[in-house]
Amino acid sequence: MSMKLEQALDKLKNSGIRMTPQRYAILSFLLDSKEHPTADDIYKALEDRFPSMSVATVYNNLKVFIESGLVRELTFGDNSSRFDADMSNHYHAQCEKCGVIVDFHYPTLTAIEQTAAEETGFVVKGHRVEVFGICRSCLNVTTH
View 1: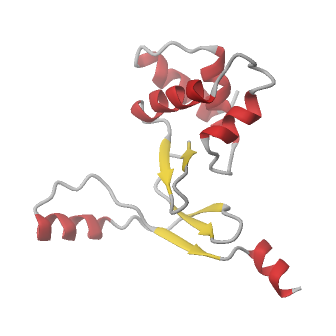
View 2 (view 1 turned 90 degrees about the vertical axis):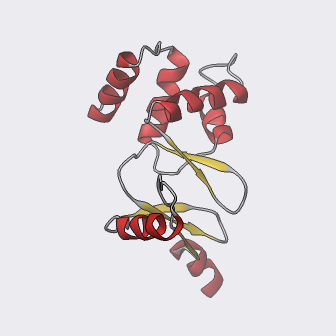
View 3 (view 1 turned 135 degrees about the vertical axis):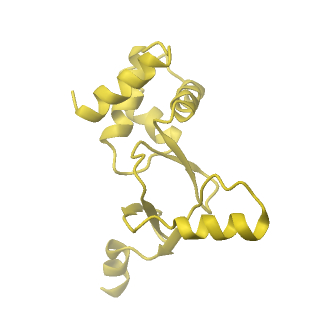
């Protein structure tokens, strides 16, 4: 069992959330994934092991993980929510052709939040930076 999974399980246990086999499988899948899957992707990956599980079950469990601070929901221009279990401060770049999402790290832009708070009077809870373009794989397809 990975250290991240152990820490996540401890956090759920301390929050009083019961660990079911389905929750364990969804969380494990997310922690192992670098793909930022949709709920449907998660459902399709696990449906053989859990034939009685529905997409709604996946969504409901994702909501539990989001509320527990273990998973974040990402929304992009294609109107589909994707899920990320990497809660570290990082940003995302998305390919406009194939939709792949890649993590990249950059110093957290806290100055933006501070300026926004000062200029608007808002209590700023966070920010989102989206970078988009064409990934290497799609570039190679179009140039050959």
